[in-house]
Length: 144
Image (cartoon, rainbow, N blue to C red; front, side):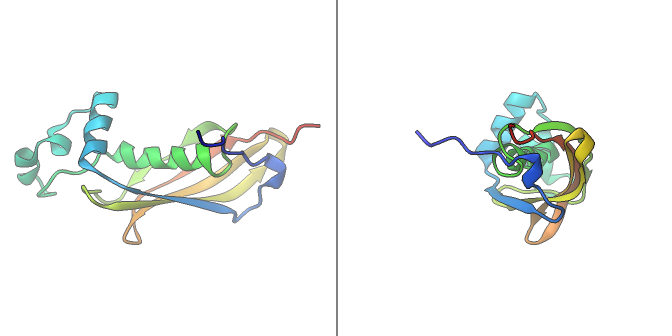
């Protein structure tokens, strides 16, 4: 059993602080996401169908890549204890089976009176953004 990750307290955050996580998208990931989400759009699951689209092959669900943002927040920065308040997303390019998605979140603003932090979020494949957005999280304060 691994030891639980530790979260960062609001007081330990600073503008410009960042964390990243890399994930290789597999066929199994896409299939599992389709099952969990109920999104069984054939562009994600049917190679023959997807081959007739502008993408020419199966692509991952955009929300699968967006889910990697949640993973960085929940496990790295701020980490366990942080609570999502909001997230914007702009899907810039498709993600294909075998792509490595590097997800980076960066503190862009701190709101001390509410213990909130704003983050810029970027998912990239080969240094090209595939998802961009902004998130607001509630971050636990240091215990007294």
